Length: 159
Image (cartoon, rainbow, N blue to C red; front, side, top):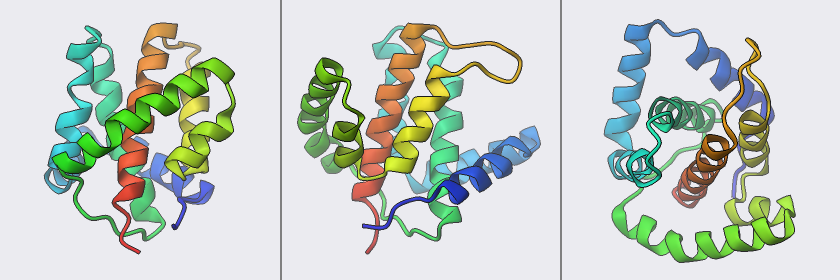
Protein backbone atom coordinates (compact mmCIF):
# COMPACT_ATOMS: atom_id res chain seq x y z
CA UNK A 1 0.00 0.00 0.00
CA UNK A 2 1.34 3.43 -0.91
CA UNK A 3 2.06 5.68 2.05
CA UNK A 4 1.70 9.44 2.17
CA UNK A 5 5.15 11.04 2.49
CA UNK A 6 6.20 13.78 4.88
CA UNK A 7 6.88 15.99 1.84
CA UNK A 8 3.27 15.54 0.69
CA UNK A 9 1.98 16.42 4.17
CA UNK A 10 4.14 19.56 4.24
CA UNK A 11 2.97 20.54 0.75
CA UNK A 12 -0.67 19.94 1.75
CA UNK A 13 -0.22 22.20 4.78
CA UNK A 14 1.30 24.87 2.55
CA UNK A 15 -1.59 24.60 0.08
CA UNK A 16 -4.44 24.54 2.62
CA UNK A 17 -2.98 27.20 4.93
CA UNK A 18 -2.46 29.67 2.08
CA UNK A 19 -5.95 29.52 0.60
CA UNK A 20 -8.31 32.47 0.75
CA UNK A 21 -11.63 31.85 2.50
CA UNK A 22 -13.30 31.44 -0.89
CA UNK A 23 -10.65 29.00 -2.13
CA UNK A 24 -10.91 27.04 1.12
CA UNK A 25 -14.67 26.86 0.68
CA UNK A 26 -14.20 25.58 -2.90
CA UNK A 27 -11.66 22.90 -1.95
CA UNK A 28 -13.84 21.82 0.98
CA UNK A 29 -16.78 21.49 -1.39
CA UNK A 30 -14.68 19.51 -3.89
CA UNK A 31 -13.46 17.07 -1.23
CA UNK A 32 -16.92 16.87 0.36
CA UNK A 33 -18.44 15.90 -3.01
CA UNK A 34 -15.71 13.28 -3.56
CA UNK A 35 -15.97 11.78 -0.06
CA UNK A 36 -19.53 12.50 1.03
CA UNK A 37 -20.02 9.47 3.33
CA UNK A 38 -16.64 10.03 4.98
CA UNK A 39 -17.34 13.68 5.70
CA UNK A 40 -20.82 12.82 7.04
CA UNK A 41 -19.25 10.22 9.35
CA UNK A 42 -16.52 12.59 10.53
CA UNK A 43 -19.00 15.38 11.16
CA UNK A 44 -21.08 13.25 13.54
CA UNK A 45 -18.25 13.62 16.07
CA UNK A 46 -18.97 17.17 17.29
CA UNK A 47 -22.51 16.13 18.19
CA UNK A 48 -21.54 12.72 19.59
CA UNK A 49 -18.81 14.23 21.74
CA UNK A 50 -20.90 17.36 22.47
CA UNK A 51 -17.92 19.45 21.42
CA UNK A 52 -18.55 22.27 18.94
CA UNK A 53 -14.82 23.09 18.87
CA UNK A 54 -14.28 19.97 16.78
CA UNK A 55 -16.33 21.13 13.80
CA UNK A 56 -13.88 23.57 12.20
CA UNK A 57 -10.89 21.43 13.15
CA UNK A 58 -12.37 18.35 11.52
CA UNK A 59 -13.15 20.18 8.28
CA UNK A 60 -9.60 21.56 8.22
CA UNK A 61 -8.00 18.13 8.76
CA UNK A 62 -10.45 16.47 6.34
CA UNK A 63 -9.19 18.82 3.62
CA UNK A 64 -5.56 18.62 4.71
CA UNK A 65 -5.46 14.81 4.80
CA UNK A 66 -7.16 14.49 1.42
CA UNK A 67 -4.79 17.11 0.00
CA UNK A 68 -1.82 15.10 1.32
CA UNK A 69 -3.01 11.99 -0.56
CA UNK A 70 -3.47 14.18 -3.66
CA UNK A 71 0.02 15.70 -3.32
CA UNK A 72 1.51 12.19 -3.40
CA UNK A 73 -0.60 11.27 -6.44
CA UNK A 74 -2.42 8.55 -4.50
CA UNK A 75 -5.77 7.82 -6.13
CA UNK A 76 -8.69 7.08 -3.81
CA UNK A 77 -12.03 5.43 -4.40
CA UNK A 78 -15.03 6.88 -2.62
CA UNK A 79 -15.45 5.71 0.98
CA UNK A 80 -18.94 4.23 1.42
CA UNK A 81 -21.09 3.37 4.46
CA UNK A 82 -20.06 -0.30 4.25
CA UNK A 83 -16.39 0.74 4.64
CA UNK A 84 -17.26 2.72 7.75
CA UNK A 85 -19.33 -0.11 9.26
CA UNK A 86 -16.54 -2.60 8.53
CA UNK A 87 -13.89 -0.41 10.17
CA UNK A 88 -15.68 0.56 13.39
CA UNK A 89 -15.25 -2.54 15.56
CA UNK A 90 -11.60 -3.28 14.69
CA UNK A 91 -10.82 0.45 14.96
CA UNK A 92 -12.19 0.76 18.49
CA UNK A 93 -10.46 -2.49 19.50
CA UNK A 94 -7.19 -1.00 18.22
CA UNK A 95 -7.82 2.23 20.17
CA UNK A 96 -8.39 0.23 23.37
CA UNK A 97 -5.06 -1.54 22.84
CA UNK A 98 -3.33 1.77 22.12
CA UNK A 99 -4.70 3.61 25.15
CA UNK A 100 -3.74 0.65 27.39
CA UNK A 101 -0.17 0.43 26.10
CA UNK A 102 0.47 3.84 24.46
CA UNK A 103 2.45 1.95 21.81
CA UNK A 104 2.26 4.09 18.67
CA UNK A 105 3.15 1.11 16.47
CA UNK A 106 -0.34 -0.26 17.15
CA UNK A 107 -1.86 2.80 15.47
CA UNK A 108 0.71 2.98 12.68
CA UNK A 109 0.24 -0.66 11.70
CA UNK A 110 -3.55 -0.38 11.84
CA UNK A 111 -3.93 2.68 9.66
CA UNK A 112 -0.82 1.84 7.59
CA UNK A 113 -0.07 5.54 7.15
CA UNK A 114 2.65 6.15 9.75
CA UNK A 115 3.55 9.64 8.53
CA UNK A 116 -0.05 10.85 8.71
CA UNK A 117 -0.60 9.14 12.09
CA UNK A 118 2.54 10.76 13.53
CA UNK A 119 1.58 14.12 12.02
CA UNK A 120 -1.86 14.03 13.68
CA UNK A 121 -0.35 12.93 17.01
CA UNK A 122 2.03 15.91 16.90
CA UNK A 123 -0.68 18.34 15.76
CA UNK A 124 -2.99 17.55 18.66
CA UNK A 125 -0.26 17.58 21.30
CA UNK A 126 1.65 20.75 20.38
CA UNK A 127 0.84 24.42 20.77
CA UNK A 128 -0.02 26.48 17.70
CA UNK A 129 2.33 29.21 16.50
CA UNK A 130 0.31 31.68 18.55
CA UNK A 131 0.86 29.61 21.70
CA UNK A 132 -2.67 28.25 21.93
CA UNK A 133 -3.25 24.57 22.56
CA UNK A 134 -6.26 22.29 22.32
CA UNK A 135 -7.88 21.10 25.51
CA UNK A 136 -6.94 17.51 26.32
CA UNK A 137 -10.51 16.42 25.60
CA UNK A 138 -10.64 18.13 22.18
CA UNK A 139 -7.14 16.89 21.31
CA UNK A 140 -8.08 13.28 22.11
CA UNK A 141 -11.34 13.49 20.16
CA UNK A 142 -9.64 15.09 17.15
CA UNK A 143 -6.92 12.42 17.27
CA UNK A 144 -9.46 9.57 17.32
CA UNK A 145 -11.61 10.95 14.50
CA UNK A 146 -8.59 11.86 12.36
CA UNK A 147 -7.16 8.35 12.77
CA UNK A 148 -10.48 6.87 11.68
CA UNK A 149 -10.43 9.15 8.63
CA UNK A 150 -6.84 8.15 7.76
CA UNK A 151 -7.66 4.45 8.23
CA UNK A 152 -10.72 4.69 5.97
CA UNK A 153 -8.84 6.59 3.28
CA UNK A 154 -5.94 4.13 3.43
CA UNK A 155 -8.41 1.33 2.73
CA UNK A 156 -9.76 3.38 -0.21
CA UNK A 157 -6.39 3.66 -1.96
CA UNK A 158 -6.60 2.46 -5.55
CA UNK A 159 -3.57 0.21 -6.01
